[in-house]
Amino acid sequence: MILTDTHAHLYLNAFDDDRDTMIAGAFRTGVTRILIPNIDQDSLVPMHHLCNQYPGHLFPMAGLHPTSVRDDFETVLSTIGAGLPGNYVGIGECGIDLYWDRTFLAHQKMAFRTQLEWSFKHGLPVAIHIRSSFDEVFEVLKSTGHATFKGVFHCFSGNKTQAAQAIEMGFLLGIGGVVTFKNSGLPKIIKDIDPSKIVLETDAPFLAPMPYRGKRNESAYLRIVAEKVAALWGMPIHEAASITTANAVSLFKKINHHE
Image (cartoon, rainbow, N blue to C red):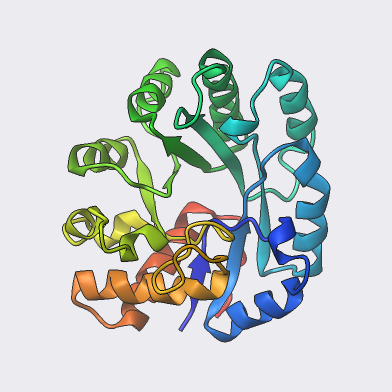
């Protein structure tokens, strides 16, 4: 069984004590490809260093996380974008986050739009962060003048209408540990969505699935997410793994597809 974790920040300090052991554990569970999104200019070096250690298994993405957007965002974007297209498999993590603070909303919109244009210029799919910002994200997407996009609504947590709107625009939905939470409304939404529109992710070290909620998330826990999604779709886990991995490989075309 082959699983693909389309979103994990494995270069963060949370893994400093056991990073290689954790990655080996993921491989043993069938998670043989892991996409590594960037956060800011400081994470570029550790991200590339880690991906270079695991060629054909870990794949870097270029982006500026919305919560890292400040007054100097244009300079930071220039630094991050200088390496494109390089060996990047996607653009991200980018988007809009208004959960904590709206101070830099205008800056976040501009930074997001710049990264969307990177996506089109280089033919790379985009991983979009949406937190308390669906309306603003859709507004920026429509403002680009592009009718359809290639990418993922990372850590999707919206309603059926928002899911349909994202899919209609060409996006897949990234589903992670939240789908296993007892208070999550995601299961009712996911069970009715065409499996071809879903990719799986962990967002490690964040958002660990049950029964690890509140603890450090790992790519190995993607299997738990796959089991939950498979049950919602009424199919064996190996079938859900095959479908969602095929979706990931089809979207992120620069991933080496090896069985």
